[in-house]
Image (cartoon, rainbow, N blue to C red; front, side):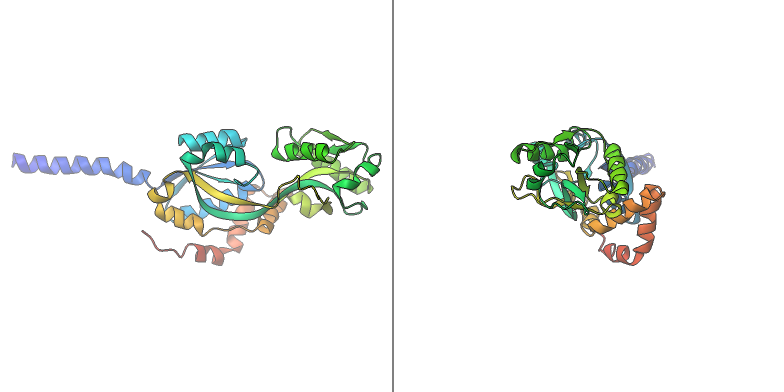
Length: 283
């Protein structure tokens, strides 16, 4: 009897120890950058994983270096990133500890733009019109990849315009004010962005190829994630969010919705699509 009770107790203890581990297998730690292109991708993929029974813990980061360090250390397990150009340095530095999981969108483009009513079409035409632009290109936050490329463009094209550092909010306000007055302005801008949808702008041609071509977004993870979480990996690989949809979500936010509300509305409007994404075998 004592032997039987001991066996039962050992089994109960073993079962008790196994339960938290099993529960932990259904928790995924997801990182994100608090930017308008990555937040919709994160929210939509989170929904798909939660529908598969996972608990998704999201940690926002302010810049690539911190995000990649957290991913390499294991503080988070997955992260959406552009590895081709924008975050290439961080990917290259950490890739031995990471893996690409799947593409999730494509088309990020950054450059220098002007309102469409401004009658120039190339970066090569900026100098001859420098005075009309007030001798400046209105930039965003110092240290942004876009500002690095814009500074290189100023150098490569020998531009006589000053690249003014500031913030995305200040650049947007300057663009709004200039377009309302039909004034000339050159700004550093990117797509997907609600600004490109709201303000009728055009990117200036870049014949020297200073700015990268349109870039892809990928889910990346700690090395071994796909093997450890095969069902989650398959669910994530089914998700693809077109650039136009990311822009539309951010336009809704600019019009007054919260990001959570805008993502929820997109998910509700695309329930059939998400159902097809989720029609994947369980392991």
